Structures are given as C-alpha cells and as structure tokens.
Length: 103
Image 1 (cartoon, rainbow, N blue to C red):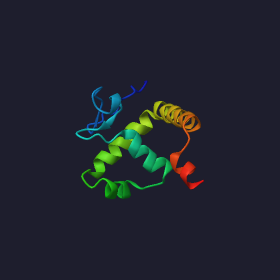
Image 2: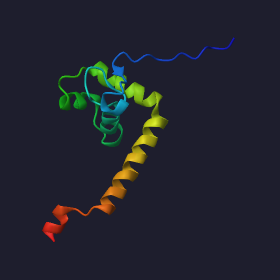
Image 3: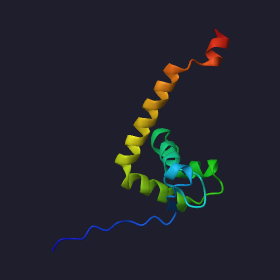
C-alpha cells in the first residue's frame, strides 16, 4: 500500500511580496530563512547561538526556518550561488574606496 507524501506546514514562516522581496521570512519579522540557514550551515552557528543573536526569536522559530530551508534546499542553494556571483561581478566593476585609501 503506497504511503502518501505529506507536506510539512511551517507556522513560523511567511512569504509576502512586500517583505524582503518575497523571500521566506520568520513570520512577524524581516529575518529571512536564508539568513538563519547561512548562520547554521555555512558559519556553523548552533540554533542556541542564533537565538543569542536574535533574542526576540524563539527556538521553535529557528528550527522551523531550518526545516523550511532543508525542504527547499535546492532553491535556496541556487539563490545563494546567484547572489555570490552577482556580488563577485559588482566587486570587479567597482573598486574598493577603502583599498584605494590604504594603498
């Protein structure tokens, strides 16, 4: 007997085109799921330490953001690569004023 795939609901995540360009955020905030995922995945910051950075959030919000990230990992990873490529292009186009001053 086949098992039906069940979509997980994310009560702490919202998407609104008027907030953060329509990126998924923690509901009631402008904190993007991507911001939480980067801290956890790339920077190696634990969920408890992320709470230290955002004391107004609850641990369940952080875990829901991470769950949402993992369910949509391909999309988030593509977006991250696109953003990094864009930043690299911008850095090539515009020289650093600080670097110029420092010589």
